[in-house]
Image 1: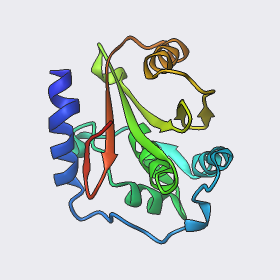
Image 2 (image 1 turned 90 degrees about the horizontal axis):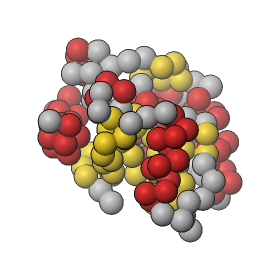
Image 3 (image 1 turned 90 degrees about the vertical axis):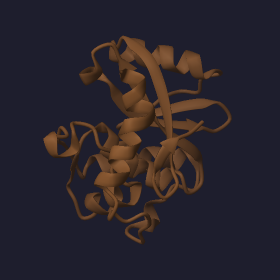
Length: 170
């Protein structure tokens, strides 16, 4: 059931739920990171405009809005969303100059699952709100580190990209 939701139904539901959401924006383009070292500053700025708010029944407890919509809601803010909304907003800024994905970490207890930003840049990095990891040589070693750091029982992962709608990527 976990795979059916993360790899298929969640994408369909998110596209339907956010069909009228913007797919591009001109809001705060000055924050788009040009250098890898700028990503941390963008995450910190976004975090200062974020209030964690769990998805409710209107989002079937797991709906990923468009990156542009999340970004626009953060400025002027606050962005009221959960981990996928925060990292989708971050995806909007980072994806302009860096290869990145939303990384869903699926746990045995699906309610404990988590979404963060995965960046490929001379190695494997992840950004979990404002925590930017060191470089990992392999994707698997990065996922193992996340599991230990967050004390998660990860059973599968899913990479997502946005091209006029979220889809499986990687």
